[in-house]
Amino acid sequence: MRFASHGIVVLIAVCLGLTGRAGAAEPFPARPLTMIVPFPPGGPSDVLARIIAEPMRASLGQPVIVENVSGGAGSIGVGRVARAPADGYTLSLGNLGTHVFNAAIYNLPYDPVTDFEPVSLLPANNHLILTSTKVPSATLQELIEWVKANSHRVTGGTGGPGSPSHLAALYFQQVIGARYELVPYRGTPLAMQDLIGGHIDILFDQVASALPVVSSGSIKAFAVTADRRLAAAPGIPTADEAGLPKFYTSQWFGLWVPRGTSREVIQRLNSAVVSALANDSTRAKLAELGMTIPPPEQQTPAALGALQRSELQKWQPLIKQAGVHPQ
Image 1: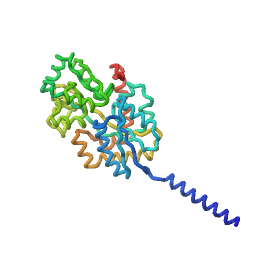
Image 2: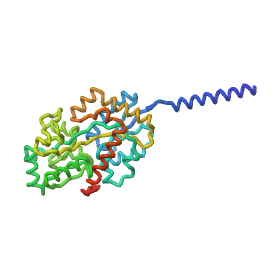
Image 3: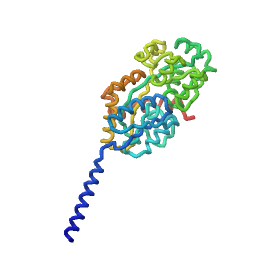
Image 4: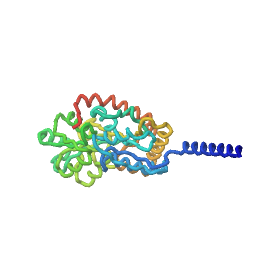
């Protein structure tokens, strides 16, 4: 009986060991993932997130739930991801503003580089130079002259201090040599509402979110801030064609996870993104929005990390020189 009891104990120990190893080897992901979009619904980041979430679900075998956590020009949502467990289940969909500009503007409770692990570079988006239908100008050159003649009463909306729409507006003012009042909003969707209503005059917004509104006739588009016309809207001239040479602003997007996430999990997520961006249906949707998909060699974690570091070196001195501060 003593031998039998010992054998039972050994058998139980072996079974527990096998169970432990099986649990440790549980494939990722085993439950739904949450992709934090640090802006309100309806904006470019939100649109992009929802386009890629479905093909990522097909690849991962688990739902990818998009959750909007807005505020602080994106810093509230990004901070939430920084504090999340490093298990790959909480993702940060960010952009040039959230993971570069904010580092020079806000006293952040996290470091946008060292507190995250890059997963993949996502499609990029240019801006459209937009106005209310109440603005009398018909061309970009006429708009510039109108702004110069009425700068004391012209207003422009931005997605908040340091947002891409804000810096694009500052760049525009610098290039044309005229200043006008910039009104900060908690995201460009809110600014777009006031542009449609005629409460502000000018807005720089990304093609992905602005083009449907332009197509409806609710606002006017004067140029795309790129060196080539949009396939989705070939009637909109480039900044060069409209008389503002080399006025280019590009908003790139990326996907990050909290620091300490394992290489294996990051690679699994990266593979899902790469697969999503290769999907014909996904590519068609992105093309309709005027978004540019990065080539495969730029869709790696290393490529996103390198781009983020180079952009920090480029933009931070300019932002500090301009004296951009939270409001």
